[in-house]
Every structure is written in C-alpha cells, then in structure tokens.
Amino acid sequence: MVQNLNIIQQKIFFSLNDFESQLEIWKKEKQQLVFTNGCFDIMHLGHVDYLSKAADLGTKLIVGLNSDASTKNLKGPTRPICNQKSRAGLLAALFFVDAVILFDEQTPINLISRILPDVLVKGADYNIDQIVGAKEVLANGGEVKTISFLEGYSTSSIEQKILKAHQ
Image 1 (cartoon, helix red, strand yellow):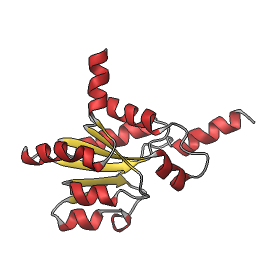
Image 2 (tube, one colour):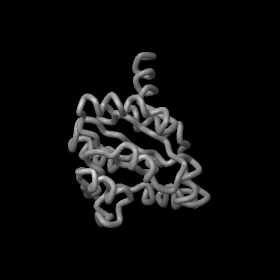
Image 3 (tube, helix red, strand yellow):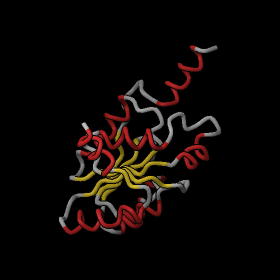
Image 4 (cartoon, helix red, strand yellow):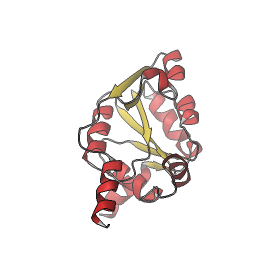
C-alpha cells in the first residue's frame, strides 16, 4: 500500500518550479499534453467524467488545482470545504491524472503560459474566448476544447443538499 501512496504523492507538485523537470521530460518524449484546472472541492462523479474525457484528448493530463487561498478568493469564505492536500491527493489518485499542480493565483495563466499544452480543456459552460490561456495555447499551435458536464452533478448542488439537511 505504501507503494501506491508514493505513486500518488509523486504526481503532486506544489509549484510550477517543482513541475519543471517533469514537464521537460514529457516535452522531450513528445507527449500530447492536456491541461485543465479547477478547485475540485468535493470530488464527485461529474468531476471523474470530465477529467476522464479530458485525459482522452492526449497522453498526459495535467490538472492545475486552485490552492486553498485561491479557492477562498473565488468561491467565498466558506470554501474550500476540503483542503488542498485532500483535493490534490484525490485528483492524483485517479489513474488518468498524471500531474496535479497547485497554484495560488486567481487564474492559471502562469501555468498555461509555461506549460503551453497541446490541448487546453474547460467545461462547456465557457466560450472559448472566455477561457484563460486560450490565446496563448492557440498561438502556440495547440487546441482549446470544452467538455459538457455530467448532468445532475455539481459541488454547489452537493453543498446545498448538505446545508438543507442540517437546517
């Protein structure tokens, strides 16, 4: 079991600098890099569906994960519900996720600009012209794609169910 936990931990990077050497290896190997990002606060089937579809678009799936501070800034004072260590560990435990990189900024533009993935992915609730990093990826010859969410699954709806149950 310790071996599996080591594999999970090796996929988690606490900064872009920590990820640089792995990025260089994958680029030399000409891996098809896919990048997506989010808070992934309470993992659910919708996240698994979205991430697995993103992974199918290349050979290495890189997930930019909003840190606790970044998530709080985006989602409000009651979030995140699960801390960044938990969220990173759950994402890294998915066999089709190859790297999880934490970031503190409001957007992952610094990650995207450095990684320059072959495919940038966001949910279909975004138009391509609204996706952070789309211009940079397209200018580098990459693609920007959107993936529809699995209906009936969202962190916000789970949060509301929990709150309603405790009123």
